[in-house]
Picture (cartoon, helix red, strand yellow):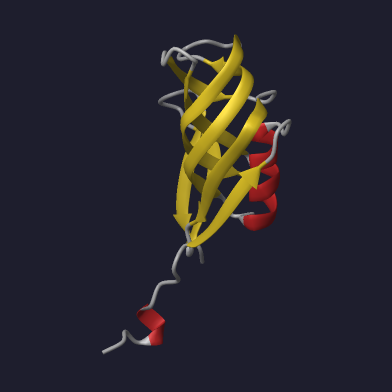
Length: 143
């Protein structure tokens, strides 16, 4: 038996993206999310390549630059009206891996293939967290 309409929950909605060479990866994700998911979304999958990567490493205030071509092994995080929290793992031509927070200024080298997920029935935001001192993810049911 199907569930009564009052108790059915809407299914999440997905947006597949392919970004071409030269695009700023974070800027493009923020722009896509603003149109696709004004109530916030998750980046659930991301692969591709970057040229001259810039990452904010753990517990650092400024970005670190990594010259050369890089493969995107994984990209995940959240995008909300109040900001983005995105982690990325990259490998160089010798297979060495670096990872950190994705900042603006990372240009796609050949492609970036991504999947965004808008969790139906939920609103994602960011707000001050007294325990961490950072603007952390806030999740609430859509009214």
